[in-house]
Image (cartoon, rainbow, N blue to C red; front, side, top):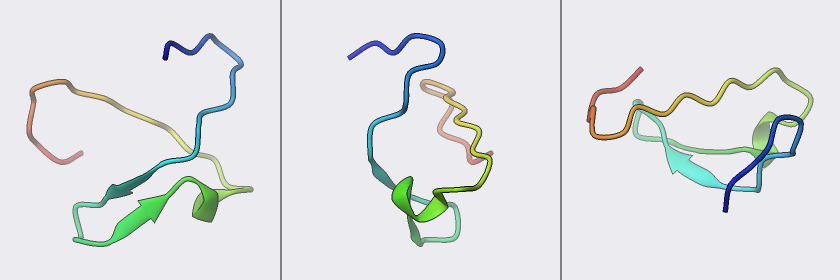
Length: 44
């Protein structure tokens, strides 16, 4: 599902580089930057 500038990101949970799960809900009220590197297979 494509998003446009200004759209709210859907709720999701992903594994972090520290082997913990991070959810967007847990970051509410904080500045969040989403970065995607397709096929890079490296942590940011």
